[in-house]
Length: 194
Image (cartoon, rainbow, N blue to C red; front, side):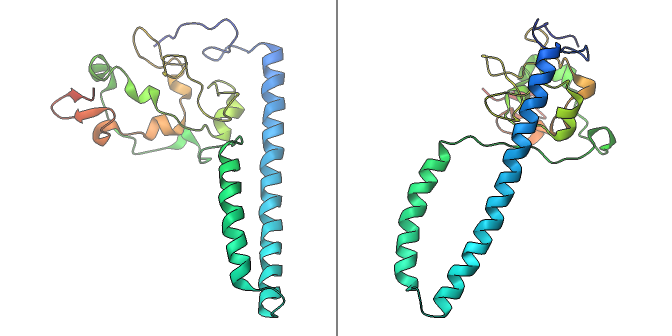
């Protein structure tokens, strides 16, 4: 189903504006480097933990005093971490090779549910990013981009159909709304959530 055109974006497989493609590539590089940095921090943390354990075992550090200080520091740093940016990527599976997908007659149910599943938040995979068709939110990499009304930018506001259906992410392909109370009070009786 067609989706309304956004003059600045790549729609339905058309080539994006060269500047947008450069920005996408640059942001992907920055985020890849950030993920590598995170891996380096995990490795450094492991070395530090091993060092502390060795010092405790030799009686150089008092374990109770260390735990008390660590708990205070952890509370402070946890609050700080909530305010920092996070890069999220979904599982890297080949979405075109997925099998046993849920069989739901969306076309018949969209007038009832209003395509509420297109309001759910999720991260894209590297496959989605590499294809450069499905859009992501630059402020929350790599979350699906949404409009101001909360719907995915690929959701047609008139029909609620998907404008990138053949390229839709794996999570959209495998999502089963039948038991999701955010979507249906009773799927079988066709009673949508409010």
